[in-house]
View 1: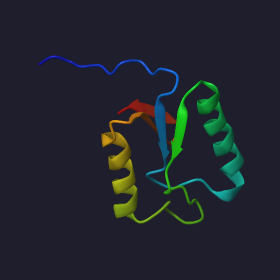
View 2: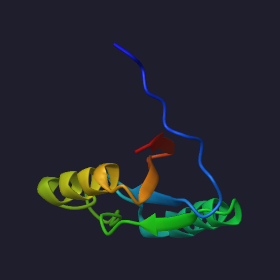
View 3: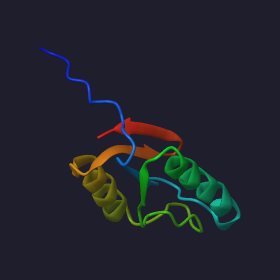
View 4: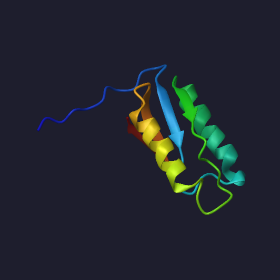
Length: 90
């Protein structure tokens, strides 16, 4: 089997940001904003998901979190997905 690697990110590429688990509590929202600004400062377009609520045990119902992550991973316009401090090429 041949291993296929994605091309490196280029300025203007879209990077999806989601939280498929516990979300981002209000007191850490500024930290998230700093991370989003950093992604944008590197020349990428940040696409922040809706499943970011950190007020409860999880960021959203499981089906919503799974749908958002799957949508980002399968969207050909999103070149990488960041979640909980990691980025993965999509």
